[in-house]
Length: 370
Image (cartoon, rainbow, N blue to C red; front, side, top):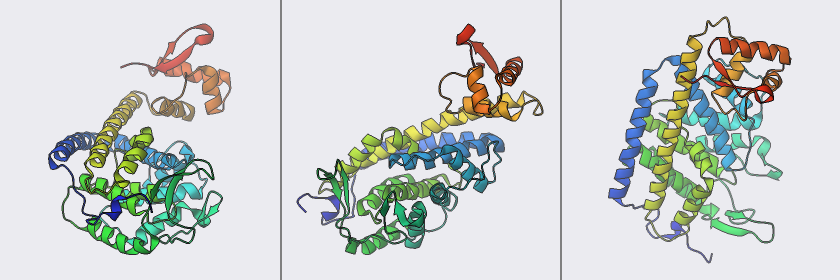
């Protein structure tokens, strides 16, 4: 191996960092964390359920997208809502094994945060990510730590024959011993703070790279498990994976920088992790504010007046609605006629939910500002 990696250091895995820099960054995260948790406790059960559902959906979808896997968001939402006992309007009974595997892992990490992490638990997670033992068109080893039967574990990019190696993990023969050390540390009640511990665990896990595939998603689930310990609640109200996905190039760059060096100083990784966690908490505050606005709006309308089509559109408008809402688009989304769409939209205007924007052929509908 011509290059040097962090695990080759004689003091591996005794990480070090600049205490002053990290304590300052950590205090900032904990302050924002406390404000967010306080806000969630001040709202009712319905808005809280809606927020935790939306965050869980984003966590599952974003963690997969970081690895280039695109999941059906509706199926993810349905699977999570069903498991959490949350009623939703578009509940689907379609079962997608790829979706079920990562949903199981994500919810287990968050809801069972008080249970110890173990090799069996991690292996079950990884097996669930690859139903039938296939990763795309490749047959892989699932439910067990990797071996080197196909050669050293490397992270590469580029076309076949001209691959660029970004990282080469330690030999598979060392994985059981390294994971034993990792699990002993991660389950200990010793310092550091759980948020800081989540950052270290994430780096440590991906450095070992214990599985043939699925290491990134498993690492983020371990991270969520520790962040749930920090929150001391089984419901997550912010999604780190979504914040990472927004800056995945930075994520891969800082991981490569940290692992491709013969140094135990991980200050820059910890600073990046804490900054990204703080951004995730800020994003979640916006999600919660939108849900509270929606909840207050719906309480002004007699529940019997809203039909399922209107509810669906309101959900979309408070979520990730793309483009402008027109009568034609309303009819297409709700699978109804344009005449019915027009009546539904006029009713929403009458109830002060929507207002018209534009005129003539440019007429569209937006949520009324409050």
